[in-house]
Amino acid sequence: DAKTTQPTSMDCAEGRAANLPCNHSTISGNEYVYWYRQIHSQGPQYIIHGLKNNETNEMASLIITEDRKSSTLILPHATLRDTAVYYCIVNNAGNMLTFGGGTRLMVKP
Amino acid sequence: GAVVSQHPSRVICKSGTSVKIECRSLDFQATTMFWYRQFPKKSLMLMATSNEGSKATYEQGVEKDKFLINHASLTLSTLTVTSAHPEDSSFYICSAWEIGRSTDTQYFGPGTRLTVL
Image (tube, rainbow over all chains, first blue to last red):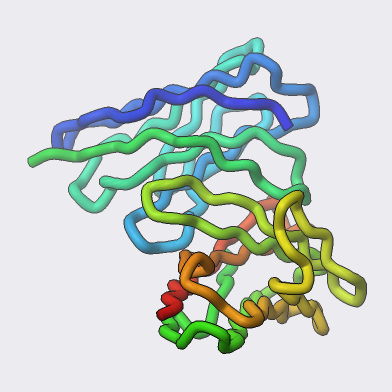
């Protein structure tokens, strides 16, 4: 599986957009970009995934660069409940996911 | 989205006892489930891949005789920690791929916190 690089931590003001970057320069053509988050003492929660097109759902938007070497997860209006560790993972569907360190997002009032 | 459940959510046991953790896919079938372990302030580490109707595949360093996995049906996988010791205390999380609907997504259970005294 391709490796990803994410900042260790980020802060965001409540109500503002949170933009979480992820580098995956060794991604292969058939690998998807998945985003999960983990709130303390809970299992990871699926957020969104994409292959090469930008994606949006009720939780977030995913912007993937044209060369697919990086992506950004956007939480449009962060709330305190969005405080969590966010994991960017690249993978083929059906395989086990390899978790890196993720980004610890702190949403502040 | 699809739902994966785990039972129990929390268990405390004495050293030397065995503990069984159940993982169920509630509204989809999963031929493959995964078991992860997470220590405090660490990321999830894959322990094993559970395959319905066949033997599990264990990651390097995970003792298959200590962590028994049974995937007897398309909606249930169990992890049994045999002769648990305090160093087995951890957060155990299962996951399953929902494949075949509009999107291929892996969903995780809520986790089971094991404390071995």
